[in-house]
Length: 441
Ligand SMILES: Nc1nc2c(ncn2[C@@H]2O[C@H](COP(=O)(O)OP(=O)(O)O)[C@@H](O)[C@H]2O)c(=O)[nH]1
Ligand SMILES: [Mg+2]
Image (cartoon, rainbow, N blue to C red):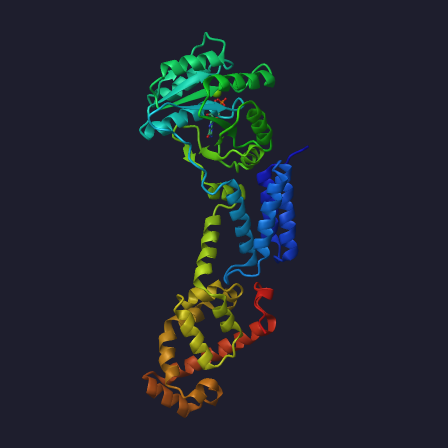
Protein backbone atom coordinates (compact mmCIF):
# COMPACT_ATOMS: atom_id res chain seq x y z
CA UNK A 1 0.00 0.00 0.00
CA UNK A 2 1.26 3.41 -0.85
CA UNK A 3 1.21 5.51 2.24
CA UNK A 4 0.93 9.21 2.02
CA UNK A 5 2.70 11.52 4.34
CA UNK A 6 0.35 11.93 7.18
CA UNK A 7 1.31 15.42 8.13
CA UNK A 8 0.99 16.86 4.68
CA UNK A 9 -2.28 15.12 3.96
CA UNK A 10 -3.74 16.43 7.20
CA UNK A 11 -2.46 19.83 6.33
CA UNK A 12 -4.01 19.64 2.89
CA UNK A 13 -7.30 18.71 4.49
CA UNK A 14 -7.21 21.68 6.80
CA UNK A 15 -6.11 24.03 4.09
CA UNK A 16 -9.35 23.21 2.36
CA UNK A 17 -11.15 24.39 5.44
CA UNK A 18 -9.24 27.64 5.48
CA UNK A 19 -10.00 28.27 1.84
CA UNK A 20 -13.64 27.30 1.74
CA UNK A 21 -15.92 30.32 1.49
CA UNK A 22 -18.26 28.92 4.08
CA UNK A 23 -17.86 26.31 6.74
CA UNK A 24 -20.97 24.21 6.86
CA UNK A 25 -21.90 20.71 7.81
CA UNK A 26 -20.87 19.35 4.44
CA UNK A 27 -17.38 20.80 4.78
CA UNK A 28 -17.02 19.43 8.28
CA UNK A 29 -18.00 15.98 7.04
CA UNK A 30 -15.55 16.28 4.17
CA UNK A 31 -12.77 17.26 6.54
CA UNK A 32 -13.55 14.38 8.83
CA UNK A 33 -13.40 12.01 5.88
CA UNK A 34 -10.05 13.49 4.81
CA UNK A 35 -8.67 13.05 8.29
CA UNK A 36 -9.88 9.49 8.44
CA UNK A 37 -8.26 8.73 5.12
CA UNK A 38 -4.96 10.29 6.20
CA UNK A 39 -4.86 8.38 9.42
CA UNK A 40 -5.88 5.09 7.89
CA UNK A 41 -3.26 5.47 5.20
CA UNK A 42 -0.75 5.98 7.95
CA UNK A 43 -1.82 2.66 9.40
CA UNK A 44 -3.49 4.11 12.40
CA UNK A 45 -5.71 1.60 14.09
CA UNK A 46 -9.21 1.73 12.60
CA UNK A 47 -11.01 2.01 15.89
CA UNK A 48 -8.73 4.83 16.94
CA UNK A 49 -9.46 6.65 13.71
CA UNK A 50 -13.19 6.27 14.10
CA UNK A 51 -13.11 7.48 17.69
CA UNK A 52 -10.98 10.44 16.82
CA UNK A 53 -12.99 11.49 13.80
CA UNK A 54 -16.26 11.03 15.63
CA UNK A 55 -15.09 13.34 18.38
CA UNK A 56 -13.96 15.95 15.87
CA UNK A 57 -17.24 15.80 14.02
CA UNK A 58 -19.31 16.02 17.17
CA UNK A 59 -17.40 18.98 18.44
CA UNK A 60 -17.38 20.80 15.14
CA UNK A 61 -21.07 20.40 14.57
CA UNK A 62 -22.03 21.02 18.14
CA UNK A 63 -24.51 23.83 18.15
CA UNK A 64 -22.95 25.86 20.88
CA UNK A 65 -19.74 27.68 20.39
CA UNK A 66 -18.88 31.09 21.70
CA UNK A 67 -19.67 34.27 19.86
CA UNK A 68 -16.62 35.92 18.43
CA UNK A 69 -15.39 32.58 17.19
CA UNK A 70 -16.14 31.57 13.67
CA UNK A 71 -17.21 28.07 12.84
CA UNK A 72 -13.97 27.82 10.96
CA UNK A 73 -11.90 28.59 14.03
CA UNK A 74 -14.05 26.34 16.10
CA UNK A 75 -13.43 23.49 13.68
CA UNK A 76 -9.68 24.00 13.53
CA UNK A 77 -9.55 24.10 17.29
CA UNK A 78 -11.43 20.83 17.53
CA UNK A 79 -9.04 19.13 15.12
CA UNK A 80 -6.04 20.58 16.88
CA UNK A 81 -7.12 19.53 20.33
CA UNK A 82 -8.20 16.06 19.35
CA UNK A 83 -4.93 15.41 17.54
CA UNK A 84 -2.99 16.72 20.48
CA UNK A 85 -4.96 14.47 22.75
CA UNK A 86 -4.20 11.61 20.40
CA UNK A 87 -0.48 12.25 20.78
CA UNK A 88 -0.81 12.31 24.52
CA UNK A 89 -1.52 15.48 26.40
CA UNK A 90 1.65 15.33 28.42
CA UNK A 91 3.65 12.17 27.78
CA UNK A 92 5.27 10.80 30.86
CA UNK A 93 8.90 11.77 31.06
CA UNK A 94 11.50 9.05 30.73
CA UNK A 95 11.61 7.33 34.08
CA UNK A 96 15.06 7.55 35.56
CA UNK A 97 15.25 5.79 38.89
CA UNK A 98 17.70 7.43 41.24
CA UNK A 99 20.19 5.35 43.16
CA UNK A 100 20.72 2.72 40.49
CA UNK A 101 21.95 2.44 36.96
CA UNK A 102 19.43 3.23 34.24
CA UNK A 103 20.08 1.66 30.91
CA UNK A 104 18.82 3.23 27.71
CA UNK A 105 19.31 1.56 24.35
CA UNK A 106 18.98 3.53 21.15
CA UNK A 107 17.86 1.86 17.96
CA UNK A 108 17.01 3.09 14.48
CA UNK A 109 18.25 2.96 10.95
CA UNK A 110 21.54 4.38 9.75
CA UNK A 111 21.53 8.13 9.54
CA UNK A 112 18.42 8.64 11.64
CA UNK A 113 20.45 10.43 14.28
CA UNK A 114 21.15 7.75 16.90
CA UNK A 115 24.74 8.63 17.66
CA UNK A 116 24.01 12.33 17.91
CA UNK A 117 20.96 11.60 20.04
CA UNK A 118 22.89 9.32 22.39
CA UNK A 119 25.31 12.15 23.08
CA UNK A 120 22.43 14.63 23.48
CA UNK A 121 20.68 12.46 26.02
CA UNK A 122 23.91 11.88 27.93
CA UNK A 123 24.36 15.64 28.07
CA UNK A 124 20.71 16.19 28.98
CA UNK A 125 20.93 13.97 32.06
CA UNK A 126 24.39 15.17 32.94
CA UNK A 127 22.99 18.69 33.16
CA UNK A 128 20.43 17.37 35.57
CA UNK A 129 23.11 16.20 37.94
CA UNK A 130 23.38 12.56 36.90
CA UNK A 131 26.53 10.59 36.08
CA UNK A 132 26.18 9.56 32.47
CA UNK A 133 28.21 7.32 30.17
CA UNK A 134 28.04 6.14 26.58
CA UNK A 135 28.65 2.82 24.90
CA UNK A 136 29.29 2.51 21.20
CA UNK A 137 27.83 -0.80 20.07
CA UNK A 138 27.91 0.00 16.38
CA UNK A 139 30.31 -2.48 14.86
CA UNK A 140 29.16 -1.84 11.35
CA UNK A 141 30.13 1.75 10.76
CA UNK A 142 33.93 2.21 10.84
CA UNK A 143 33.92 5.74 12.22
CA UNK A 144 31.15 5.18 14.75
CA UNK A 145 33.30 5.15 17.87
CA UNK A 146 35.30 8.19 16.84
CA UNK A 147 32.09 10.09 16.12
CA UNK A 148 30.67 9.34 19.53
CA UNK A 149 33.94 10.15 21.26
CA UNK A 150 34.16 13.44 19.49
CA UNK A 151 30.69 14.44 20.62
CA UNK A 152 31.11 13.23 24.20
CA UNK A 153 34.58 14.63 24.73
CA UNK A 154 33.34 18.20 24.70
CA UNK A 155 31.04 17.56 27.61
CA UNK A 156 33.22 15.14 29.52
CA UNK A 157 31.08 12.07 29.21
CA UNK A 158 33.07 8.80 29.10
CA UNK A 159 32.65 6.53 26.09
CA UNK A 160 33.31 2.84 25.86
CA UNK A 161 34.02 1.15 22.56
CA UNK A 162 36.08 -1.72 21.24
CA UNK A 163 36.95 -1.70 17.57
CA UNK A 164 38.41 -5.19 17.80
CA UNK A 165 35.32 -6.91 19.11
CA UNK A 166 32.89 -8.22 16.47
CA UNK A 167 29.85 -8.77 18.58
CA UNK A 168 27.88 -5.67 19.46
CA UNK A 169 26.33 -7.45 22.41
CA UNK A 170 29.78 -8.33 23.73
CA UNK A 171 30.82 -4.70 23.54
CA UNK A 172 27.66 -3.61 25.32
CA UNK A 173 28.28 -6.07 28.15
CA UNK A 174 31.90 -5.00 28.49
CA UNK A 175 30.83 -1.40 28.64
CA UNK A 176 28.26 -2.12 31.28
CA UNK A 177 30.92 -3.71 33.44
CA UNK A 178 32.99 -0.60 33.16
CA UNK A 179 30.14 1.77 33.93
CA UNK A 180 28.85 -0.10 36.95
CA UNK A 181 28.30 2.91 39.16
CA UNK A 182 26.82 5.37 36.71
CA UNK A 183 23.27 6.73 36.87
CA UNK A 184 22.45 6.71 33.17
CA UNK A 185 24.20 4.62 30.54
CA UNK A 186 23.26 5.03 26.90
CA UNK A 187 23.96 2.40 24.29
CA UNK A 188 24.33 3.52 20.69
CA UNK A 189 23.72 0.75 18.18
CA UNK A 190 24.22 0.09 14.48
CA UNK A 191 21.63 1.10 11.97
CA UNK A 192 22.68 -1.09 9.14
CA UNK A 193 23.90 -4.64 8.59
CA UNK A 194 24.46 -6.91 5.69
CA UNK A 195 20.72 -7.30 5.64
CA UNK A 196 17.78 -6.14 7.66
CA UNK A 197 17.22 -9.55 9.20
CA UNK A 198 20.68 -9.66 10.76
CA UNK A 199 20.28 -6.15 12.12
CA UNK A 200 16.98 -7.03 13.73
CA UNK A 201 18.52 -10.22 15.09
CA UNK A 202 21.39 -8.27 16.63
CA UNK A 203 18.99 -5.87 18.34
CA UNK A 204 16.95 -8.76 19.64
CA UNK A 205 19.98 -10.54 21.09
CA UNK A 206 21.36 -7.39 22.65
CA UNK A 207 18.07 -6.47 24.23
CA UNK A 208 17.73 -9.93 25.77
CA UNK A 209 21.25 -9.86 27.18
CA UNK A 210 21.47 -6.37 28.55
CA UNK A 211 17.83 -5.82 29.52
CA UNK A 212 17.62 -2.07 29.02
CA UNK A 213 15.16 -0.01 31.05
CA UNK A 214 13.95 1.52 27.87
CA UNK A 215 14.57 1.06 24.18
CA UNK A 216 14.35 4.38 22.38
CA UNK A 217 13.65 4.41 18.68
CA UNK A 218 15.30 7.32 16.90
CA UNK A 219 13.55 8.40 13.76
CA UNK A 220 14.43 11.07 11.29
CA UNK A 221 11.70 13.70 11.42
CA UNK A 222 12.13 14.50 7.76
CA UNK A 223 11.12 11.10 6.47
CA UNK A 224 7.51 10.44 5.74
CA UNK A 225 5.54 7.28 5.84
CA UNK A 226 8.64 5.05 6.06
CA UNK A 227 8.68 5.99 9.71
CA UNK A 228 5.79 3.64 10.35
CA UNK A 229 7.47 0.75 8.54
CA UNK A 230 10.74 1.33 10.40
CA UNK A 231 9.00 1.61 13.72
CA UNK A 232 7.17 -1.65 13.19
CA UNK A 233 10.29 -3.53 12.16
CA UNK A 234 12.22 -2.43 15.24
CA UNK A 235 9.26 -2.88 17.50
CA UNK A 236 9.08 -6.54 16.48
CA UNK A 237 12.67 -7.06 17.49
CA UNK A 238 12.65 -5.11 20.73
CA UNK A 239 9.62 -3.54 22.35
CA UNK A 240 10.04 0.19 21.79
CA UNK A 241 9.46 2.23 24.92
CA UNK A 242 9.56 5.68 23.37
CA UNK A 243 10.38 7.58 20.24
CA UNK A 244 12.95 10.28 19.72
CA UNK A 245 12.24 12.38 16.66
CA UNK A 246 15.47 13.87 15.33
CA UNK A 247 15.98 16.65 12.82
CA UNK A 248 12.89 18.60 13.67
CA UNK A 249 14.74 21.81 13.06
CA UNK A 250 14.32 23.46 9.70
CA UNK A 251 11.17 22.94 7.78
CA UNK A 252 10.35 19.34 8.66
CA UNK A 253 6.84 19.03 9.95
CA UNK A 254 7.29 15.56 11.34
CA UNK A 255 4.18 13.95 9.96
CA UNK A 256 6.04 10.66 9.71
CA UNK A 257 6.61 10.71 13.43
CA UNK A 258 2.90 10.65 13.94
CA UNK A 259 2.63 7.56 11.77
CA UNK A 260 5.35 5.91 13.83
CA UNK A 261 3.55 6.74 17.03
CA UNK A 262 0.38 5.38 15.54
CA UNK A 263 2.06 2.23 14.27
CA UNK A 264 3.56 1.13 17.56
CA UNK A 265 1.79 3.17 20.19
CA UNK A 266 4.97 4.42 21.87
CA UNK A 267 5.07 8.05 22.96
CA UNK A 268 7.45 10.68 21.73
CA UNK A 269 9.37 12.05 24.68
CA UNK A 270 12.05 14.18 23.06
CA UNK A 271 12.82 15.85 19.79
CA UNK A 272 16.12 16.84 18.24
CA UNK A 273 16.31 20.32 16.87
CA UNK A 274 19.84 20.61 15.53
CA UNK A 275 23.19 18.95 15.15
CA UNK A 276 24.67 20.32 18.36
CA UNK A 277 24.68 18.46 21.61
CA UNK A 278 22.31 20.84 23.35
CA UNK A 279 19.74 20.77 20.56
CA UNK A 280 17.29 18.59 22.39
CA UNK A 281 13.83 19.48 23.65
CA UNK A 282 11.14 17.77 25.62
CA UNK A 283 8.28 16.92 23.36
CA UNK A 284 5.25 19.20 23.63
CA UNK A 285 2.32 17.65 21.76
CA UNK A 286 0.41 20.88 21.18
CA UNK A 287 3.42 22.55 19.65
CA UNK A 288 4.08 19.52 17.48
CA UNK A 289 0.54 19.48 16.14
CA UNK A 290 0.73 23.16 15.33
CA UNK A 291 3.84 22.45 13.35
CA UNK A 292 2.31 19.39 11.78
CA UNK A 293 -0.62 21.38 10.56
CA UNK A 294 1.70 24.05 9.28
CA UNK A 295 0.22 26.71 11.50
CA UNK A 296 2.69 28.45 13.67
CA UNK A 297 0.35 30.77 15.47
CA UNK A 298 -2.25 28.22 16.29
CA UNK A 299 -1.80 29.07 19.93
CA UNK A 300 -3.01 32.61 19.28
CA UNK A 301 -6.16 31.24 17.77
CA UNK A 302 -6.72 28.87 20.64
CA UNK A 303 -6.18 31.67 23.12
CA UNK A 304 -8.67 33.80 21.28
CA UNK A 305 -11.23 31.05 21.42
CA UNK A 306 -10.64 30.45 25.10
CA UNK A 307 -10.90 34.13 25.85
CA UNK A 308 -14.16 34.37 23.97
CA UNK A 309 -15.50 31.35 25.76
CA UNK A 310 -15.17 32.96 29.13
CA UNK A 311 -15.85 36.53 28.31
CA UNK A 312 -18.93 36.90 26.21
CA UNK A 313 -22.12 35.08 27.01
CA UNK A 314 -23.95 34.45 23.79
CA UNK A 315 -27.20 35.78 25.21
CA UNK A 316 -25.77 39.20 25.67
CA UNK A 317 -24.64 39.50 22.11
CA UNK A 318 -27.87 38.10 20.85
CA UNK A 319 -29.89 40.54 22.89
CA UNK A 320 -27.80 43.33 21.55
CA UNK A 321 -28.36 42.26 17.99
CA UNK A 322 -31.97 41.27 18.08
CA UNK A 323 -33.59 43.47 20.66
CA UNK A 324 -35.95 46.32 20.02
CA UNK A 325 -33.80 49.27 19.73
CA UNK A 326 -34.82 52.22 21.79
CA UNK A 327 -32.42 54.52 23.57
CA UNK A 328 -33.18 52.62 26.75
CA UNK A 329 -32.25 49.35 25.07
CA UNK A 330 -29.09 50.82 23.73
CA UNK A 331 -28.24 52.13 27.15
CA UNK A 332 -29.14 48.91 28.93
CA UNK A 333 -27.20 46.83 26.51
CA UNK A 334 -24.16 49.00 26.60
CA UNK A 335 -24.34 49.01 30.35
CA UNK A 336 -24.54 45.25 30.63
CA UNK A 337 -21.80 44.73 28.13
CA UNK A 338 -19.52 47.24 29.65
CA UNK A 339 -19.02 45.01 32.62
CA UNK A 340 -17.63 42.39 30.27
CA UNK A 341 -14.77 44.52 29.06
CA UNK A 342 -14.28 47.35 26.67
CA UNK A 343 -17.05 47.74 24.19
CA UNK A 344 -14.64 47.90 21.33
CA UNK A 345 -13.25 44.53 22.20
CA UNK A 346 -16.71 43.07 22.35
CA UNK A 347 -17.86 44.55 19.09
CA UNK A 348 -14.75 43.29 17.38
CA UNK A 349 -15.42 39.79 18.52
CA UNK A 350 -18.68 39.61 16.68
CA UNK A 351 -17.69 38.25 13.29
CA UNK A 352 -19.00 40.36 10.51
CA UNK A 353 -19.68 43.25 12.79
CA UNK A 354 -16.11 44.37 13.08
CA UNK A 355 -16.09 45.05 9.39
CA UNK A 356 -19.21 47.10 9.52
CA UNK A 357 -18.61 49.35 12.47
CA UNK A 358 -16.32 52.21 11.63
CA UNK A 359 -13.30 52.28 13.89
CA UNK A 360 -13.85 55.83 15.07
CA UNK A 361 -17.38 55.06 15.99
CA UNK A 362 -16.26 52.26 18.22
CA UNK A 363 -13.71 54.49 19.86
CA UNK A 364 -16.38 57.02 20.43
CA UNK A 365 -18.83 54.56 21.83
CA UNK A 366 -16.31 53.46 24.36
CA UNK A 367 -15.14 56.89 25.33
CA UNK A 368 -18.53 58.44 25.62
CA UNK A 369 -20.43 55.70 27.26
CA UNK A 370 -20.22 57.42 30.62
CA UNK A 371 -21.51 60.67 29.24
CA UNK A 372 -24.32 58.95 27.41
CA UNK A 373 -25.35 57.36 30.63
CA UNK A 374 -25.80 60.73 32.29
CA UNK A 375 -27.63 62.17 29.29
CA UNK A 376 -30.03 59.25 28.99
CA UNK A 377 -30.71 59.38 32.72
CA UNK A 378 -31.87 62.96 32.28
CA UNK A 379 -34.49 61.99 29.72
CA UNK A 380 -38.10 61.18 30.41
CA UNK A 381 -39.21 57.55 29.87
CA UNK A 382 -41.18 58.72 26.85
CA UNK A 383 -38.11 60.29 25.28
CA UNK A 384 -36.07 57.13 25.82
CA UNK A 385 -38.68 54.96 24.20
CA UNK A 386 -39.33 57.29 21.30
CA UNK A 387 -36.30 59.43 20.59
CA UNK A 388 -38.17 60.78 17.59
CA UNK A 389 -40.06 63.21 19.81
CA UNK A 390 -36.93 65.17 20.52
CA UNK A 391 -37.12 68.79 19.51
CA UNK A 392 -34.80 71.64 20.33
CA UNK A 393 -36.45 72.51 23.62
CA UNK A 394 -36.22 68.88 24.81
CA UNK A 395 -32.59 68.79 23.76
CA UNK A 396 -31.92 71.99 25.70
CA UNK A 397 -33.65 70.63 28.79
CA UNK A 398 -31.74 67.34 28.73
CA UNK A 399 -28.42 69.09 28.16
CA UNK A 400 -29.11 71.36 31.08
CA UNK A 401 -30.27 68.53 33.33
CA UNK A 402 -27.28 66.35 32.57
CA UNK A 403 -24.71 69.10 32.72
CA UNK A 404 -23.67 68.51 29.14
CA UNK A 405 -24.09 70.59 26.01
CA UNK A 406 -26.85 70.56 23.42
CA UNK A 407 -24.28 69.49 20.91
CA UNK A 408 -23.47 66.41 22.93
CA UNK A 409 -27.13 65.48 23.32
CA UNK A 410 -27.61 65.83 19.57
CA UNK A 411 -24.57 63.69 18.96
CA UNK A 412 -25.98 60.94 21.11
CA UNK A 413 -29.22 61.05 19.18
CA UNK A 414 -27.33 60.89 15.94
CA UNK A 415 -25.32 57.87 17.09
CA UNK A 416 -28.48 56.21 18.15
CA UNK A 417 -29.92 56.63 14.67
CA UNK A 418 -26.83 55.18 13.03
CA UNK A 419 -26.82 52.17 15.31
CA UNK A 420 -30.52 51.62 14.87
CA UNK A 421 -30.06 51.55 11.14
CA UNK A 422 -27.22 49.08 11.51
CA UNK A 423 -29.27 46.81 13.75
CA UNK A 424 -32.08 46.83 11.23
CA UNK A 425 -29.74 45.80 8.51
CA UNK A 426 -28.41 42.89 10.55
CA UNK A 427 -31.87 41.79 11.42
CA UNK A 428 -32.82 41.75 7.78
CA UNK A 429 -29.76 40.10 6.35
CA UNK A 430 -28.65 38.02 9.27
CA UNK A 431 -25.08 37.98 10.36
CA UNK A 432 -22.84 36.59 7.68
CA UNK A 433 -20.76 34.23 9.79
CA UNK A 434 -23.12 33.37 12.54
CA UNK A 435 -25.73 32.11 10.17
CA UNK A 436 -28.16 29.72 11.76
CA UNK A 437 -26.72 30.19 15.15
CA UNK A 438 -28.15 33.66 15.47
CA UNK A 439 -31.62 33.58 14.07
CA UNK A 440 -31.79 37.31 13.86
CA UNK A 441 -35.51 37.48 13.64
N1 LIG B 1 19.73 19.18 11.71
C1 LIG B 1 19.85 18.12 12.50
N2 LIG B 1 20.72 17.16 12.20
C2 LIG B 1 20.82 16.11 13.01
C3 LIG B 1 20.00 15.96 14.16
N3 LIG B 1 20.33 14.78 14.75
C4 LIG B 1 21.30 14.24 13.98
N4 LIG B 1 21.60 15.02 12.93
C5 LIG B 1 22.55 14.79 11.84
O1 LIG B 1 22.16 13.65 11.11
C6 LIG B 1 23.28 12.96 10.63
C7 LIG B 1 23.22 11.52 11.05
O2 LIG B 1 23.31 11.46 12.46
P1 LIG B 1 23.95 10.26 13.26
O3 LIG B 1 23.83 10.58 14.71
O4 LIG B 1 25.29 9.92 12.74
O5 LIG B 1 22.92 9.11 12.88
P2 LIG B 1 23.04 7.54 13.12
O6 LIG B 1 23.57 6.96 11.86
O7 LIG B 1 21.66 7.08 13.39
O8 LIG B 1 23.94 7.34 14.28
C8 LIG B 1 24.50 13.68 11.18
O9 LIG B 1 25.00 14.54 10.19
C9 LIG B 1 23.93 14.49 12.34
O10 LIG B 1 24.67 15.65 12.57
C10 LIG B 1 19.05 17.00 14.47
O11 LIG B 1 18.27 16.97 15.43
N5 LIG B 1 19.02 18.04 13.60
MG1 LIG C 1 25.61 6.16 14.51
